[in-house]
Amino acid sequence: MRMESSIEDFYCDEVLSGKTPVEVVIETDKTLAFFHTRPFYDVHIVVIPKKHITSLLDINSDDRDLNELFAVIQKVAKQVNDQYGACTVSTNIGDYQSNKHMHWHVHFGNRIRVD
Image 1 (tube, one colour):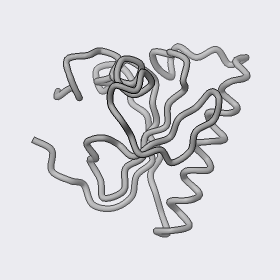
Image 2: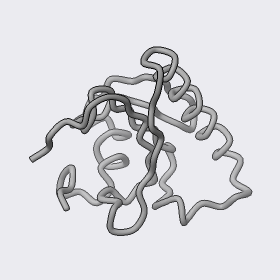
Image 3: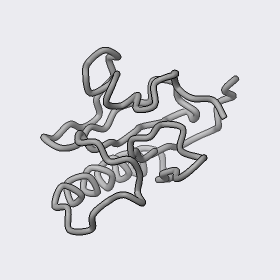
Image 4: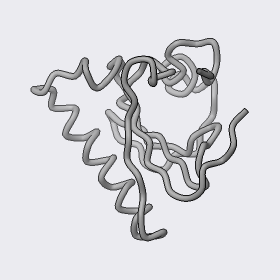
């Protein structure tokens, strides 16, 4: 499995720190949505919480920040759906999750070959 980099938490270490610039789609106090730095699809947006949460399995259902996160995911999905007529929203868990910071993919279009 290919990792974005050798960093286990690319989103905290690179994106949220500002070391890796991103094209922002939506930003709130607690959430960031941006175009993937190495997209796998024609349109590929990543949505992350600004605080570190390892994965979907580690969330606390009482966490009020999740409402904002899911509102942003919904807003991004609506934008992509309105523009292109469809989209996929997904997250990975376990060995499928190469980056150990919960993140959601909103994407549309053809899969781009990634070597």
